[in-house]
Amino acid sequence: MTFEGVDWSGKSTQAELLSSWLREQGRTVVSTREPGGTPVAEGVRELVLHGQDMSPWAEAALYAAARADHAASVIRPALARGDDVVCDRYLDSSVAYQGAARGLGEDRVRELSLIVTERLMPDRTFLVVLDPEQALYRARGDHDRIEREGAAFMRKVDEGYRAIAAAEPERVVAVDGARAPDEIAEEIRERLRPLL
Image 1: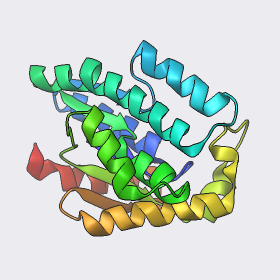
Image 2: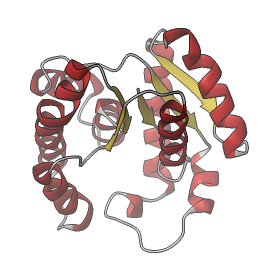
Image 3: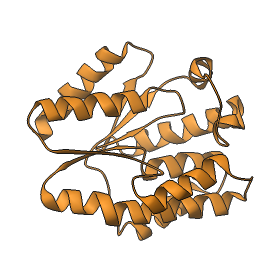
């Protein structure tokens, strides 16, 4: 399962809540994130989020490199063991952020991620939908390189995510991120129960 959404939408909170609930059900869960999850991918995370400005394709390629290592070293082995994997962001983030918002083309960025992950796709993706203006209102503290892009960029990201959800309704479940976290979590659990 993956969680997606604009920055400050509440997706990380929902990923944590679902992981905890699955463990309470007696399931073995690997909770992870992108970029990140391995030493290589965490190094890439530091570079893309806190490093110097870079070209859009350099950014997309770095995210893809991190994803390749993460999928090979963490996700596939966990799935082979029969574990549940809950991932905070995955390839839809690249499609929305680099493909749509950076203008590289959603299909091209998706294909790059599919190549490097050997076409590994989530069984279910929960898109936490929140108006970008409302998400920015939630923002506190220091912001990383992507978060500093501002409202116009985040609107493009949001449009990219909504297009993914419309194109893949069998995989992507959009949930209203403006509600209380516990209410959102209950909807996610209800939608997930048939798969367990």
